[in-house]
Length: 358
Image 1 (tube, one colour):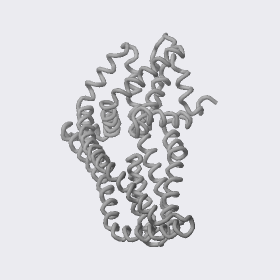
Image 2: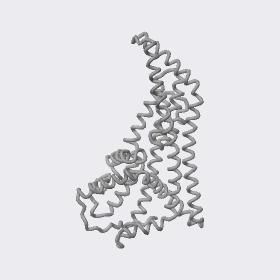
Image 3: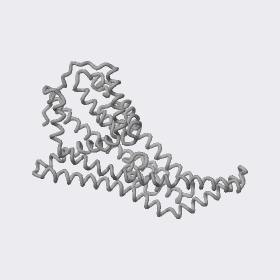
Image 4: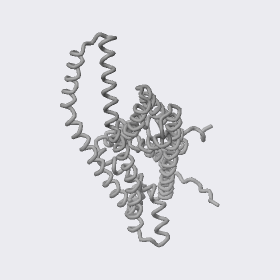
């Protein structure tokens, strides 16, 4: 049976004005924006290390060496990322296998469109050919920079992944040293409160991950139902692969949609089925961003939906797609600190879900 604990608050007689809070927010935003190259992998590493801490501690209690425990856990994380990358590459390979059939469909659609433009709109074949040549010329001048940017982004992602694993290992290995440094930043009388905040932060990250798993499950089910209603083959497979790949913002869902769109076009010989697939994924993504995610994650972190959506938008502005993921746990940590600090009770009320204020 868990023994209830009496919350310990951080003692502070200083009252923060709205102007001081705004100044601190602006300064922090500037530092986060210009330091994002360092802070993004470091933040991901902190998130991963907080999640793995209970497992690492449990392995150490069983007599396993700290270094070996950390190495095993990092290998498991690397395997998880490898599975995601494998799913991504598998989707691309399967799409490339359908390319010849897709090419024939594109040529057939081009012919039908050309006939339609001539008979219904009066656009001559010469004008159509001139437009196509100009389009291909412009596309050719842009394709090399596009491939260069894609190769750079891929290599940068691999480097960041390696950096994140290294940072996570070091945070877990030096966790006692880092905890003592944090304790030294505050007066001695606040040590117990800081310790409880650290413990609750780990639980907050754990709840965040549980919420994300629930989001992926709901999104996978909705994708599968939508694809099944349209009549796309293997709706559950395509639906849950798309759900898993939403872990990679923007790019993941685009690549995951390629294969069901291709199957829809080939199987049903109509442009409306691929359009319907795009419509299903778009609706589910909007629901995930503005309804499912705030409900599933916000309720576990006890943060209201308005603050959650604002945080997602602010994270996207400062850190892009990574910020949309990372800023949610950051806000939960700020709320934990505000809950325990008398001078920050206003911020605690603003971030909270209001259930304790009725």
